[in-house]
Length: 84
Image (cartoon, rainbow, N blue to C red; front, side):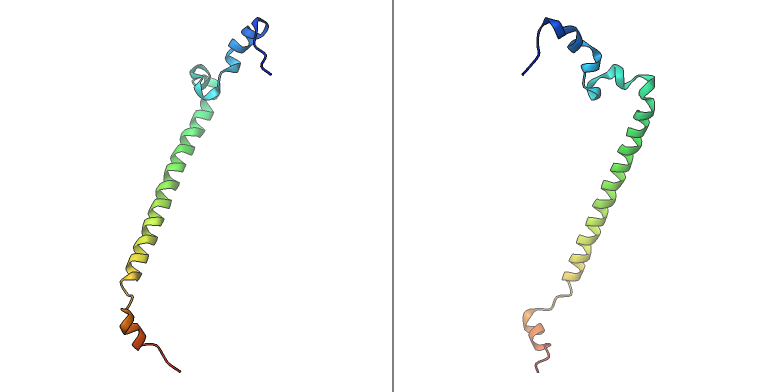
């Protein structure tokens, strides 16, 4: 059920009804300065974490590729099996 009508038009037009992330006046107000700094620090931390995860993933892939170079051909491996 929607409550639209002239009785609440002024209320809905109020800045309190704007989405905070889209409200430039709210975001740039002095009262939200600390939040902006927190967001900047969080953004940098997220970027570092993503870079770190990407580097770890690349190093694991390189380790797997290096280990793959030591696999013997099937004929040689069969000759090296200890048979009871």
